[in-house]
Length: 255
Ligand SMILES: NC(=O)c1ccc[n+]([C@@H]2O[C@H](COP(=O)([O-])OP(=O)(O)OC[C@H]3O[C@@H](n4cnc5c(N)ncnc54)[C@H](OP(=O)(O)O)[C@@H]3O)[C@@H](O)[C@H]2O)c1
Image (cartoon, rainbow, N blue to C red; front, side, top):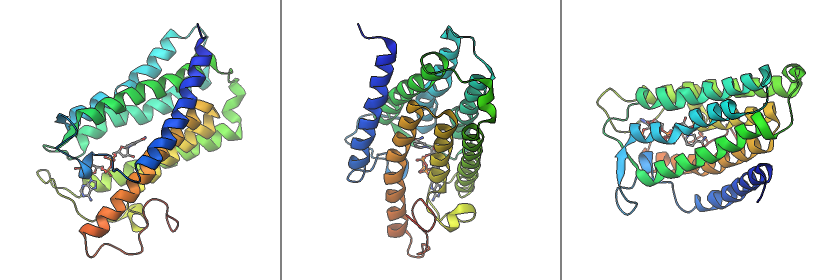
């Protein structure tokens, strides 16, 4: 019988491996959701809003469960980590799908189910580590430069991600479903500043917690969003003749 810490390490290292495979795969195959949704050959679809709610729910429930089931007495540092995580995921689960204009849009049940399982596993690894199996964070961690810089990077990333998604939302009138060229904010420089902001958030989370499961989550996020940004960028250039030629895909001036 293996102990839970060994299991958690196994899960964490498995995510590094899955991320490497997915990164390579996604350069050949675009994940079929959003503008790349495929209605045939991937099984049944469900309404996109229901899909988002279902797949992101574990990212709210699992951390709270880990906190409740922990045998440790938690200090302010762990409560702040939980607060930062929930700040992102309460928005992503309960607000984002209902603010974005997803009229009549569908999501593959396969995508929602895989994302659900991913969220269960990654949230378990991150929060069992923080609440029970990893080293204790002393209260002085709150003044450690790693915590302060990490939290700052996280909130800058959140602001970029939120603002960029808002600019996309405003592109569609209430009943519209099509696509336009996004403008303003970081769209001046890149096609997917929302992904750039998301990657910054989880970079900040990794710096602030300095934990291995946080690094696994960051690597997983990059392995998803980097190829997707390149696919979006290529799609924009193929779809709009007047697409700004100086715009990069994900990182201003670089990529
Ligand atoms: N942590 C992770 O691993 C991870 C993974 C995936 C996503 N996310 C986050 O989840 C959020 C959504 O991701 P996503 O992949 O769905 O982003 P996306 O492709 O940029 O789409 C975001 C929303 O804006 C709409 N939209 C996009 N481009 C548009 C345009 N040119 N004109 C009009 N509407 C447009 C989309 O509609 P359609 O749905 O109709 O295309 C969708 O509702 C992002 O903030 C992303 O960072 C995180």
